[in-house]
Image (cartoon, rainbow, N blue to C red):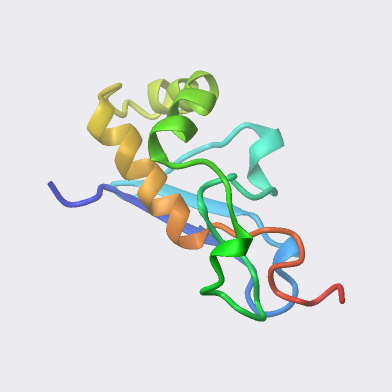
Length: 111
């Protein structure tokens, strides 16, 4: 199955902290809880603008742990948008968000 989710963080460059999430399920805009809309998602990655391959800077939760930690609010979002509450869909959501995730300071704009 192709990933039915498309996630985009709206800001680029060295103003990452000024963006917000735009996440779609099959072209339907998902409404995130207010406390998730303008913050990083906490997915696993290396968020260091100086050395993006340095494992020393690896942080965040892997897919399975992230799903467990976020299942409550994510289930509410899925129910509101008629997204099936199936494991594959939670995994696809994580993958879409992980590609666009960021961390405060990961762009170097505040340095």
